[in-house]
Length: 634
Image (tube, rainbow, N blue to C red; front, side, top):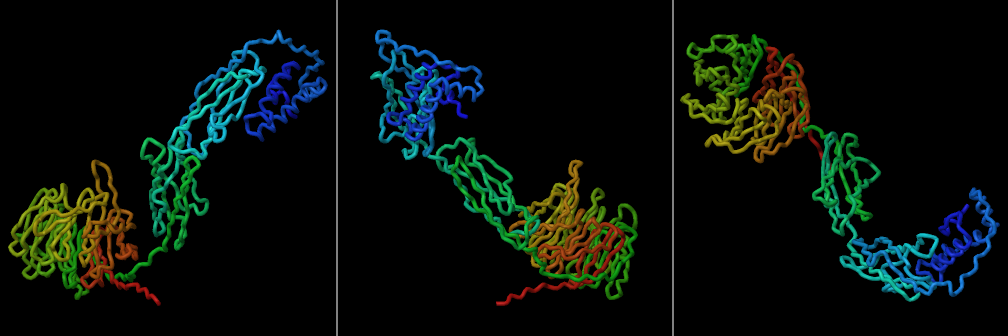
């Protein structure tokens, strides 16, 4: 049921005279022939006003209307009030006054609308005829959108003006005026608006290609949203494609104090994606109704196949050491395996005698007679590439043993330091070992004279490895750093960083292009720094190529097979793992040891792999390595 009181804007107790006055005023405003409002809107409003007046002007109809609206009081017919005489009417002319002389609509974006209201009052006599004039009625960019009486009299009245910037020139102030005429007396209100370009988002780039990646990988890319249009008053909103929710917006970063530009971070996780499939989607940036779209693409590859396969057969378990075995090494011909341990003993195992062992005896001058004591451990053993010498490193000593004469030379004594590693240059002429507090000790093998010392690390060096051509060598130790040195100048020429803990072992590939490193646990300031990774580096650039994960505890040793296709690593987790160098895939895991596997070595022909452990044993394995061939048919 319509409420005709609300349509006329009068209270339910209004008199008949008040109803007539309001009706006449509204009829004059909304009459289709004389109104300045929109014709369709005025016509509908005029119809409602007439309908309301037709009911409320008759007492019977009004009483029925009030009963329907639950208004209790019945209206009685009122006697009409006589029309005032001419003498009674005031002879004072009307005087229009506006609450504002100027309406500034501020900045309005093109193709947009904005409304402002001012109040019109009459400080003079009664009005017979009123009108509203516009400065440019033919091309007006503004119009009167609504007239609202404030009370049941004609004045004051609120006048609403609407600006429409469609088609107006941008970056310009447009001016006009609106004039109120009451019986020839006028009041003018100046209008102004600055038209600005609409915000226009632009995405940079227009496409995010995540490329091809493997299951389990996570890729993160970013794009920018710029506003190349007018100023914006709201933040950018984002909408994503509803199909295949394979990507997620994971972060925003404003580049300035305004709403744009904004950097958007997009993350793709392949865990739940189908290998071998391609994915497409989009993200739409909405800046106050203006939109720009960026397209996304990604492909999930099928897991790679290893390029080599290996068959492993366990041959022997060698037992002679009374304590854990620290180090093992094959001689250049592969028929002798040397081992050293925490018991201070060195054993030579001969292949042509079914791996029977003989203990290496040192002469009295060489020392190392206190087998089994706490200061007799031999940490590292290695053959010279020419097969003449066996070098040994341990607590307080670095020793050089000549195999043909069975004579041992003591090269260094430092009662405060235990040497971890000793290594020959590929030409067997120079011997390097780690000294006290990060020093490198250098000897001439022929003369057994010290050639110098180099301060390489702040703390103890854990590992040293020479490139196959002998031009450079690398050192590893604490803080995850691998340092690259020129042998001739003894100058550092590079540093590889990536490990989070101790660098325990280093090994060059046979072609000298790749370097393998082993990460291990390190305590820094009482805090544990875990590193259980094996990493492959490109020597020329220092770039990390792969991180091989699988070990669950510190990695103790790494070594390449002679062909360079296979990498072996050993760990405190009691395992030896075999890796395909080309793909980084694990292709084998040996679990025969009961304790930490401290050292591993390939025979020169690559057919044998030896592993040494703190369980006091050495295991020998036969390896058959086969390359995986892929035949392409045209």
